[in-house]
Length: 332
Image (cartoon, rainbow, N blue to C red; front, side, top):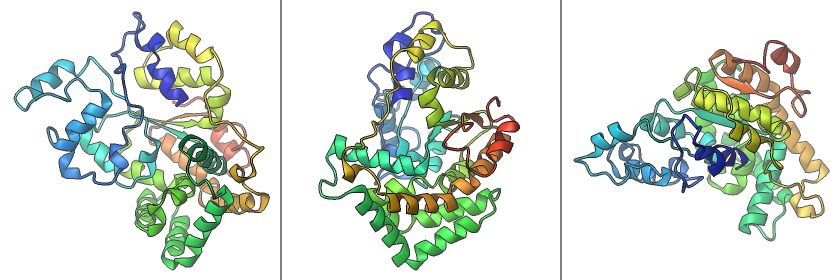
């Protein structure tokens, strides 16, 4: 949400010194089309219904073009306006990279990665405090049900183990494993997705295999963004626009606190108990943290930009020192 505001706030979007196309002023932050039920690949080709709906959700000026003037509209507006979709659920939806490749093979992607236990806790708080979900269920209840779903379905446990056994450099194996995991009933509920969504190594493999292109992906450490927003936005601006920050962008990045979900320690149901936190940490240690820096290193070698991952909470992960010594702070 904070990054979205940094890119679209009027002070930067409408800056007369801005050399780049604008984003739509009334842009929907999370259209959600590529990861919702009912999305169909054959409806995501130009001028088909869901393609036009997506243009409308993005605020694209050609969203209401007729078949007769569609190509003319695109030719006229192609370089006049950017579109931006900030939907976090896209990343772990197994078909999203295929849908997006069909829509736009050259989009730039920013992936923000957060320590997975904290990610789950923050998402739970968001849904409880902002949307009123699960009034009678604590985050411990949801986590226990998540582990129960894994342990009672041998297919899920087998698929997870198969993913863990993939070589960290075998993107095909990891992507296929995530496809298998995503196909289980486990992934049908929001409660389970809160925890399964932190399996970055597996979910990102689908994107690496089907969509990512050199120079068009920025993998960003959310914790570093929170702590060093000016540095982070300097990287984002160079990545998105290929230029230095404008004074308006510098001022906006330096002003005020970074918007983030607030930690609420005073309400027990919103915070993981020590034993459940430990269980989740061990789960993510096996499936995420152990191979995180090998994944980041491989993605950097594949042409991805990287920011952060040079401080806590990543410093205990295997490969931390080697990754940063090789240029984790500065590449590309």
